Image (cartoon, rainbow, N blue to C red; front, side, top):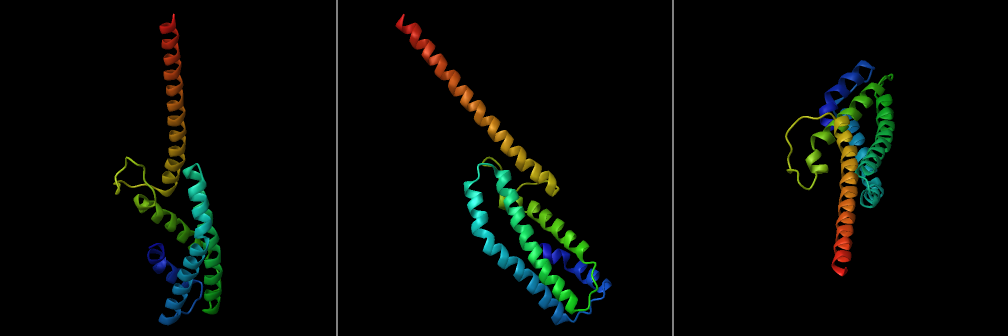
Length: 172
């Protein structure tokens, strides 16, 4: 989805940097970029899965996924840079890559109900949210979960103490 949204800007940015596109070359370049990203993300999936299922905190798993996306993006950029050079582009495409990265993060936030949701939250959420706000909520979720767990333990300890106190009174 992010690539489709950024395709017009890729064409304009690359044309401004001197690329000469034919329809076939543009489609081949976009397909190669998407394939590079997809292949690397698929190759890194077992690593991302391991951290997702073994991490205690949601935020750490999210940042591992962002790191994997960044690695894939770097290799995709390498492919795209070579293809642009072959098309005659002089450079200056780093701005487009940053734009693509930001759009990708925002798309992940847009489809957030599919990626993650709390047990008591609806499948499809309404409302707009910037990706940094979403990441902040993920981190905040871990803090709330820790506080709830600590409160539960304290409540259980208090109940146990009351039980022991009642038992002592009954023995007297």
